[in-house]
Image 1 (cartoon, rainbow, N blue to C red):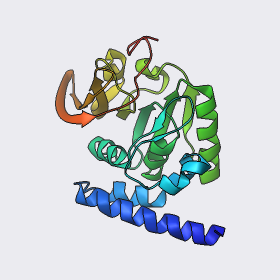
Image 2 (tube, one colour; image 1 turned 90 degrees about the horizontal axis):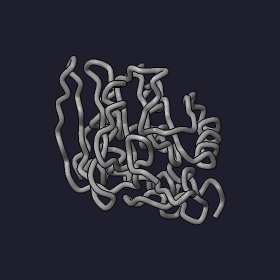
Image 3 (cartoon, one colour; image 1 turned 45 degrees about the horizontal axis):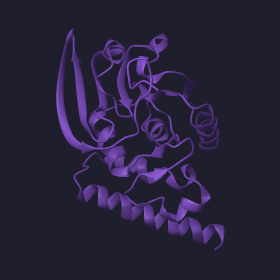
Image 4 (spheres, rainbow, N blue to C red; image 1 turned 120 degrees about the vertical axis):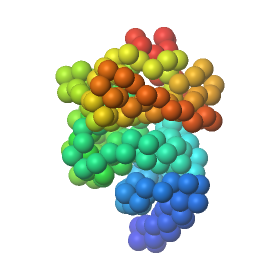
Length: 218
């Protein structure tokens, strides 16, 4: 298959994926349009590229995964970000979620504990022209240097909501984080209103564990 024909196939598959997300209840056109523009096949290994636009999580290096597109769309929609917002991502992984946030016009800061994953994600950010701040570190304690954040998104399951992340959230900001045991989690949306934190829940998600000082211990 030539590059042009492969790209056409990817475009068609991406269109089908976006329509399926819309049917599943994703209504934010900004999020859907950003996902339409992001070539998800670049964020998986070549052997998995034919499956890149399935609505499934797929394995990446370091025993991690690239999240299911529906989950990415659900979490991004819940953040309700605006252009120029400062967003912290915990768990860079493949870089796909960070790229979508950057495509939405936010200032993205992302943390990954695996150096090899972060290096590959950085290569893709450069290739796609995204100016994303990143570092290797313990995401469970956030990135206090650039706090507060309008949005914080955690792409790994935590046993509890880390206090450090609550405190790094701006007034009016939103934190989206899966919380539960190491098998299944409930998606928590935490909205900060002054010193008050209002939480809503959605069940039925599964993530790799959040490892760190305020997450699961190794």
